[in-house]
Structures are given as C-alpha cells and as structure tokens.
Length: 294
Image (cartoon, rainbow, N blue to C red; front, top):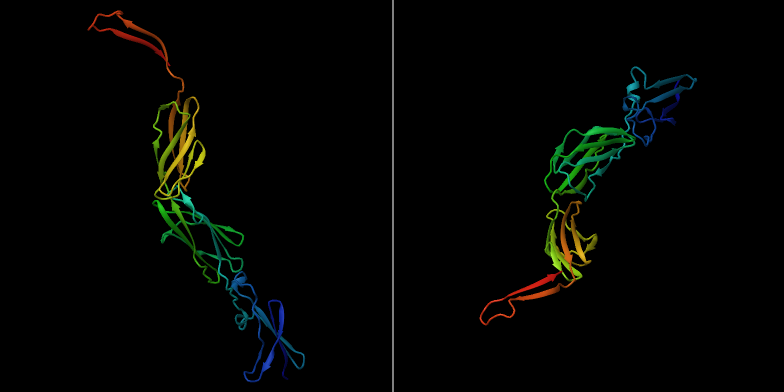
C-alpha cells in the first residue's frame, strides 16, 4: 500500500500536501497568520497532519502527539513595533514646577507590550518608579521627573512588544521656568500728581527662559519691542487713578507693578491778602499773609 493523500490542517484551513520525489516528503507552502501567536497557549499555534493510504486507512497526528507534537507547534511573530504617545509634558510646553509629572501610553494591539521594556529618561538620566496601568491594548504610564533646573529638557520613552519589536524612541522637549519676568516702569513715577488728562506709561520687561513676554496696561495688551521696551498712553480721570501693568511669560508666570496717579485740574483760589503793618515806615519790614485754598 502507498500513501494516497496527506493534509495539513492549520489555523482553520486545510492544505493538501504534494509528494516531493526528491525529498521523499509530502510538502505544501503555507502562509502564516497575519496576527502574532503570542496570545496562544505557550505562545505557539498547533496543527494537524492527516495521512490516508490507498486502502482508506487514516492516521492523524496533532500538536498533542507524544513524539511528533512539538514539531507541529510554530511561533508566529508580528513585525510592527508598539506605538508611544507622550501626553505630559507636551512638546514645547513651558512648566513652572521643577519636578513635572510625566505621562505617556504604550500600545501594541497584536503581541502586546512587554511591560518590562518600558523605559524613560530625562536628559539621558533614567527615571525609576514608573507606574504602569493596564489599558486596552497596552499601558498608561506615569512617573515623576528628577529635579530639573530652569531651561530646556527632553523626555525619551522606549518600549518593545512581546515579539521583540522595539519602537523608535519617542521624545518631547519642554522648558522649565520658575522665575517670573522682570518688569521696570520708567514712567510715570508712583504717586504722581498732574493736571494732565493722560499719561504715558513706559517700561521694559525681560525673561531669561521663556520669551517673548506679553504686557498689559489696565488689561489692554501693548506692543513689546524686541528689546523688551513698551509704551502706552493711558487716559486719566479727575482724582485718583491706579494704573496696573502686568508682564506675563510663556510659562504663565506674571509680575505686576502699579502706579498711582492723581489728576487735579482745579486751580488754587486766593481768598484774601493782608499786609501788616500797613502803612509801613521806609526801610522797615512788613508781613504779607495770603489765604489760599485748593
């Protein structure tokens, strides 16, 4: 008797094997599944061989066979690396705390994320104590940056999936700024008294870390020159006026200066004049007394 047919049942499909006279074996070309086998028991897929002779006798061997079963188990690996999304700090962010919270997600919807490969560095220094919370398709991760100085810093996140595919490191560069902008008001002087109905506010602002600085005068935005100087005319009301100047940097830190200006347009009133003694002798002195109100 001779073998009539041989079949390979794999991943829900049946493949008819063809006898190869050169090798003396029954063969077929099989396309691997489009998904990883990592989620399967022992991370492998099994199969079944069914051989039938001319008399109709059939022998079946599957992955549970004592001696041949291991040969029917195959590991299928994906080739797509995990995706990494950094949610905080966002790229280009300006932050006022020296130990910012770091948040990111790593996802791989096939073999899954290998949690042990998730790593974070800030400016090349490894960050420890990463909290990894399982979510659909991966992990949501949080950790705290080491203490940073004012200036630019870069986060880098790396991870691989369970099939060994390493994601390209994801980075985000941000700026720490803990110092508010400088603000110098050159005019008007504080507690100025004037008879003018308008005054010109002039000053200069700067910030070493997060330029440009914006300026408002009594809530109205003013143009700030490249050298940090600004000018704004403010209309005054009769009596006491408060002018509030606020400088704000890109990190949101502010510096506020106020100027008090009093407008008095009423001229003084001369109510009486007394010369004493009057008349006065030649060469003698006399006193003039004037009563004035304002």
